[in-house]
Image (cartoon, rainbow, N blue to C red; front, top):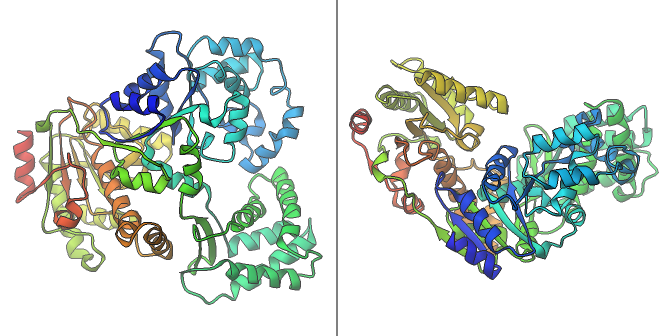
Amino acid sequence: MEDAETAFKEGRTLIAHAPTGIGKTAAVLASALKVKGDRKVFFLTSKQSQHHIAVETVKHMPSHLRAIDVISKQAMCPREESSLPYPVFEKFCSDTGQQRCNLFNKNMENVVRKLSKDTLHVQEIESICRNYNVCPHKTALLAGRDAEVIVCDYNYIFSDISERILSLLEIELQDCMLIIDEAHNLPDRVRSHMEEYINLEILRESYRLLDTRNPELAAFVKRLAMEFNDVKEKDKRIKKEFLDGMVDIALRGGFSRYESLEELLPELETAARDILEYDVAASAPMRLYSFFVTWSMEGEKVFRGFQRENMSVKVGLLDPSVVTSNVFNCVHSAVLMSGTLHPGEMYADLLGVRNPMIRSYESPFPEENRRIVSVDHLTTQYRERGVPMYQAYANGIADVANNSPGNVAVFFPSYSLMNSIADRLDMVHLKKDMIIEDRRYTKRDRDDIVRQLQITGNNLLLGVQGGSLSEGVDYKNNILCAVIIAGIPFPPPSPETKALEDYYSDKFDSRKGYEYARVFPAINRVIQAAGRCIRSRNDRGIIVLMDKRFNHSHYKKMMPDDFAFERANSLKKECEGFFE
């Protein structure tokens, strides 16, 4: 609280690596509201599920302090059109569309006053606005003018919608104090927001949809698909000229009247939106348009790649600080917090934060409640993978599962590795029921799994590091008594990872290039997954690091200071001794 208050008072940025369950949300919100003056506090999250605790925290504060909970306008819209694909809904709810919307243009003063009296969850706001037949999103933001806290998504500040949002709230960026929850997600979130791709399938589907509506556009897309089909390259990073040359050939050879891509794009956008209005599943032309808009980005900060397997071209942003540094250098102050903001210096570099306060906080929970051990005979390194190693992993997992008194979770570097080892688990004597994560899981599926863990207490949960079960779920009340980290999730070799390493090597130095692109992202996924076990001071659990590379001094020194571990001679005895 003292560090947060100092950051907010002095107009600085605090990067706080702090364990889960110690009360980060309450500490930082209280500090912000104590010193904010006339400024607005934004509590930014990467997931809607994380809004709840922030809103509940403000609800427990003095009654004159209020928060407004807001999600995307499409998610809050009560009209049937909210089910349209995002590009079509954006057209429906554009400036022109809003002029015709009876919900958007209704007098909202009474409802705004009603929302301003209390701190409400977004579902409560939506319900009130439906009763009064007004636009929930606009009403919430208007009520936000008188609220001390706005609880919203990252993109309300870190995207091109921020100017419109701040205008509606009648504030400037320099009057904002930011609290960024689970801030380890911010760099990748900014990158993914700027990422687009096209492939041969999208081009062929675009041609089919455009053929009867706009023959000249269709001719251009058909010729571009022909050029794509002739590419003989392997997976590699490409230059802008790679696709620009194909576009020039398609413009000249498609019997079109377009002189350039810039001339063609407005018509492609119009046609794409018209097609979506008739068929909400017909998104290929809009995806093609969105790709070409992003493709125009210039500079070394941009990655462009070709993938042979699905004949695709991808464009994205290597450097999130292109977006984030302007924000951090403009806002009054900020606190970034997470259980995996490690090392803080890396996040300051990645996000372009100048003169940050970097702090790492130890867990206040009893040390005897958590034991971390490693092994010396297992690894998921590519050169050692195979049936013998998969069987050895299955035996080790069974030793932990069969000698732990409750649910045990195992988190793997990838789905393919998880499935290979799951096949061997069917051949060992396992006393627990297996639950295997599916990459298509929805929030409801994840909630069902948590309920099953709560009810039976005798399960072996298999998931993926960086997946929804290792980061997006809070296993409260000690429903996991053990977590196994089955391997280190280093990114597989790819042109994009190499480009990221090269970019950061040029921007900083070769050591940081390697560590920022490859090592620390993997280590942080490990820490996130391991943190599923201990969620409060009363929880007890054992964490098993099942990869001999964890014992290498190079990787061991990259772990947070409070993540000390010892090698185990016998996993069976370690579990028996800890839980006896």
